[in-house]
Image 1 (cartoon, helix red, strand yellow):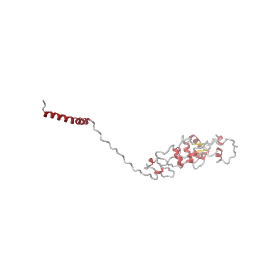
Image 2: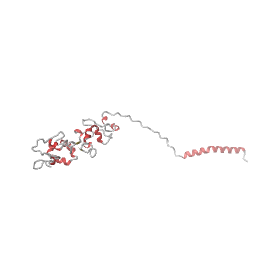
Image 3: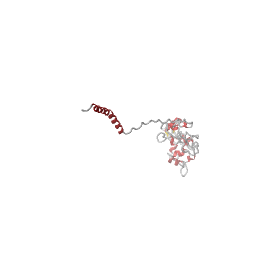
Image 4: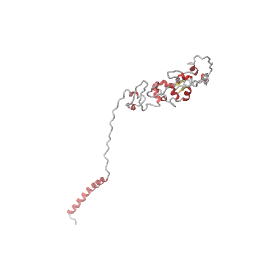
Length: 236
């Protein structure tokens, strides 16, 4: 027979074991788990103070996104021909639409019957610098140099012709003596009809054909070709 005292001790041990065993198991399982990473603190970067645009940089935002225009460190806006030298994301495309915001009369010329193909194979920047240039009208080259970049054969031949000696503010023998650079109603980029264009200089000819219908001077004469070796007129 188990004495009452021994029975009480056994009962107490059972109660202690029943109470502490789950705690021991939980503690042991926690020891087997990988250590938990400490919570990551979210750090919000401080907002950089907005730098106000200078008067010079404000010249950029008409064509470029304002975020780009704050980069002012090495940009120079001096010079009468300058549109500014800020480079960055354009506010709209195609680029010629930006030009038309100020140069709408030029846009209208590109809708005439005879015109340069700006918007397809050419852009305004094909002939003009966007920001600044040494030449007037922001031209990338002199008039004949620009024309020869596309019409090299014609200009090369024209350089030997008598018309190439004509003085003009745009340069001796400049193509713009007879042709308009943007667009006109008369092919090829003439400011008026062929015969009227020729007569604007050749006012006192000893003989004049009675032109009928569609006949014109260029049916017999080539204004770009040099005179024949033996002299005479520059016939086609």
